[in-house]
Length: 178
Image (cartoon, rainbow, N blue to C red; front, side):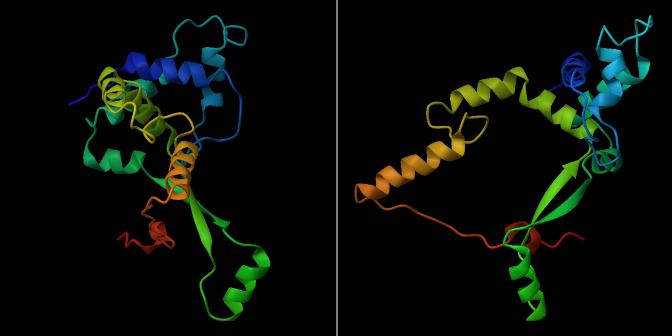
């Protein structure tokens, strides 16, 4: 099992804390809350920031899969924001006809969980696995992966080849989550 270190997650928090921005997570925690602790120009005389270090430890445990199930569930919660897939007027018409609107859910997850998963993604074994998938990998961390897939498939199709497609209509919302 992969182990994400608190040193790795602390580094992620420090890097992200150099940018101030809106709330990052479901629970309101954001990197900018650690800005004072990460930015030498803004920091006070305090050399250690215990809260930031404890957050890094919890994030590392999350990325390593070493948290109790109840905490793992808590740290993987998110708030779904529905975005229109079609113009609002068309969704209004769908509602008037008794149809469900076409929406795309966007999840805003917990910052601690994101830091832990980013630490896992940057781990040695993850990098080794990504490298083993080359040159065929067009997903896992591949630059412009989707665009490369589209161009590759368009080329195959234009040369008379067959291209398999699957259209999943609102697949995320079709799942039962109880």
